[in-house]
Length: 101
Image (cartoon, rainbow, N blue to C red; front, top):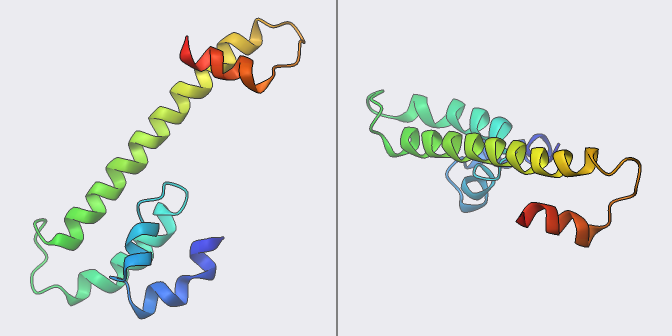
């Protein structure tokens, strides 16, 4: 909801520092990048892939994909160990130990 609430700020200045940082945070990337690109792409002189705005959006997509893969890997490790616990509650130190294993 944060990118939707801040959408007026994204529309006013899509190249501001706060908006650029927000577009690299995986939870905010889909909404903020769609809003940013709607206002950046039409103002570019030519629509080649080598414009800085396009390269930054591709980099944000790569960061988003890497975070999704990392989150799935991390939760798979925790689930694999947690499923073998047979109803015992997991504590935070145990979860950290499972991640390190």
